[in-house]
Length: 356
Ligand SMILES: NC(=O)c1ccc[n+]([C@@H]2O[C@H](COP(=O)([O-])OP(=O)(O)OC[C@H]3O[C@@H](n4cnc5c(N)ncnc54)[C@H](O)[C@@H]3O)[C@@H](O)[C@H]2O)c1
Image (tube, rainbow, N blue to C red; front, side):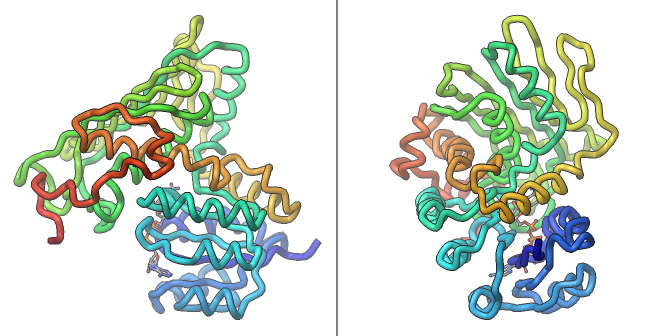
């Protein structure tokens, strides 16, 4: 079978450290050809084309789509930089991988979803947590059980990582930028979310690291379509805690307390799954699944196609919208229909000032 011709838009952190290494075995076996890289930085292009062996480079994705004959494209851009990349890919029938969060604008995401649906291409949003072997194990455990209650704990450093992930208007806050992975994971376990209510807390100027202008604690309640209720809590106030943190999901069933972390699962305190790896193989498993689906031209093979992942996006953007309305309960159907929105300027007046 011929090589799948793959293009990349955005040669930043996630492409270099996760997706390109994940694809490497497929490049080496001849299943994938890295046909074209596109980035606005000439320096990043030169460096990564040399490191990963891309055939051609572009600084403009439109030119790349015009000149290349691609089978698939990875769009790995910060969420506010999506313009017409998905549209052009869909128009050309190019299978599309898009990093999360796919947008901060629900209406834009819904419109891209329709274009992908119409084109009938394979699509995958970068929710790689669905490819953790530990996640598969939980799916198996839940086949025989009735879940009632779920809880996400995500506590990590309050120090800014880099500019755009430290600005509310650029990344939507840590709940949107990062906790979305865990929210999507509980959807993988428990199905779609119907309602949200959220409270956030901001540190005041001078209380935390200066670059961040976004909430530091996010406490979010969910009701699933199935009736299961849940809570997702994210803290970014651990500024000087020697790296202390937590990233886990608890699922409470009638007969089982299931505790998930990336490499370990316990049931009622007993370990039922353990892995040595640091979870990095999830990117390789996700890449292999995407390329297999592309070769088979079968959109149904993916675990988080663009359209069905919109409920995860609505769950985090809806949390922002609820927190801005003092915890008002919002139906995610209304968020998905863009009938309620969050306000990127809401951070003004909290913490460090916004750019304006
Ligand atoms: N799945 C995960 O675990 C995970 C982890 C980190 C980041 N991400 C997501 O991946 C996406 C990208 O994040 P990142 O960390 O790689 O960001 P980054 O800032 O490191 O890289 C973005 C790259 O895009 C380039 N770029 C900007 N505008 C462009 C344009 N118009 N055309 C082409 N290139 C352009 C920049 O020069 C930069 O090289 C984000 O949505 C982020 O949330 C996912």
